[in-house]
Length: 240
Image (cartoon, rainbow, N blue to C red; front, side, top):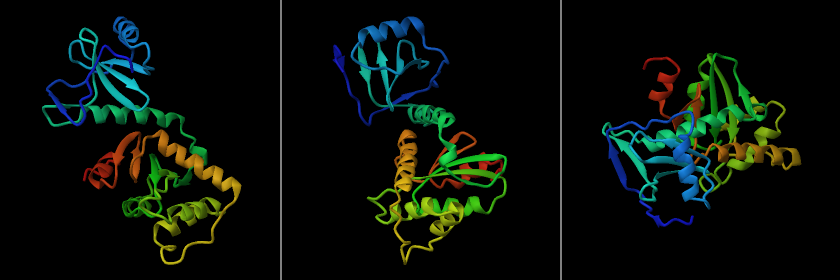
């Protein structure tokens, strides 16, 4: 980025009492000025922040803050007085917006209930197994599972993911894997070209949703990071 002045503030928390205000439309006049000042930066979206003169810039998967008058670009996190990470909330909003375009037809579909759950899962992730057990005991869910093996943590996860996608009954194979059936004896390797393509498509979904760890869950379009059962229950209307 070619800027007159660039300040990178990494890991520094900005405490504000104002909530970020995200308009549905770009502030037209400010957007023209900002794009003119940052001609070499591909900005996806410009939004107001609720702080006078400071704007949110979305660039790829990153969020920046910019003050056109001083031409200062901030990279960091905004927190309010209630200790809410406003920047992370905004990132979650942006990622959740991508759910509308997910290829649900390639996911492993489980159930046919009124609550929609999108899951990005590593078959060997212990927290994925806990959420799977919790979900499998309910009959009010429609689950769409995307496999996202993390080899650095679980070296056998990809073999299990391939077995699941290769199986005629993927739902049963998924159940077997998530309940530990293949922990002591790995399934027969599946190297079919179609399975390789399908697994890569599953991985791309995880990357598109900016998944850094599993399970990553979206319950009725609301993001849940990991096996947060209190939040999961609240989103499913359990009140517990």
